[in-house]
Length: 326
Image 1 (cartoon, rainbow, N blue to C red):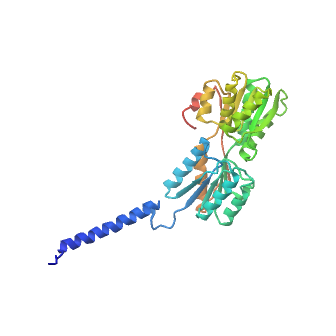
Image 2: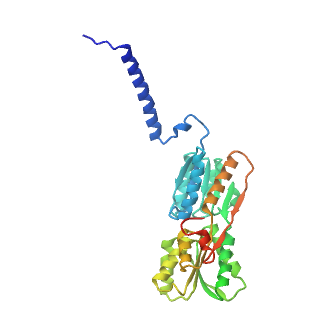
Image 3: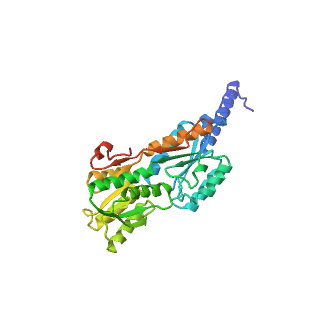
């Protein structure tokens, strides 16, 4: 005998099928990482981030600042890490262009080598925001948001001259980035005309702890005389500091850097590092996002923003604190 389904049973089945369909759609869209709250809209923008490396906490802070602001607006962020490989950065930028990004935040591994990818981005109508360091042809960037890098180097040199009557200085540079070049130029220009402060060598540490440490170790083992290190960022300064400490020279060699990283400020407080020039990575990220949206909305925007820097030394390190970035 066939069993009849009551009208309540039919209603239950219909409800079950509707719920099943709704849940299936939700699972599908969640699995595809779509934002259901934005489903059906056509105004979601894609923002790409390509910084020279993400192993530097400074870039992580800027990236987090950008992501927070963009995602709060309901838009999407794609982050790629070229790990200091200019060819990899070129590929990753082109991949993001294929994914349809509307805005590219870029900090170049090599400010000249990145240009072909930048030109392709511009040919596709993508907004380019140069972050923390300029690209070779600044005119191709819709906006440049950087620290006052020349002033950062200048401040380090000026402070050094207040602390020592003379110095034999080893410089740790990064010769493929405009920001680092500007810092070295600011440092050397401030020393110009002061013959008692001598540059005894320049080494390319690429702003990396794991590169600067063996460089300083080798220079010390070779017997080269120097009593001061100027590093273009705190990461390479901390590598230099570690090598100097290993060789028992912590009391005779002073180290200066740029960034205002929490670890560097802690070293200054302990008397192990002379000074650093503080950058403001959260401000850099916020300004970059603000200008990007202005360009997207066809509103007036700033072509270049210089974010202020400030020297941190034993005299004011407590004002900055050592637990976080400023």
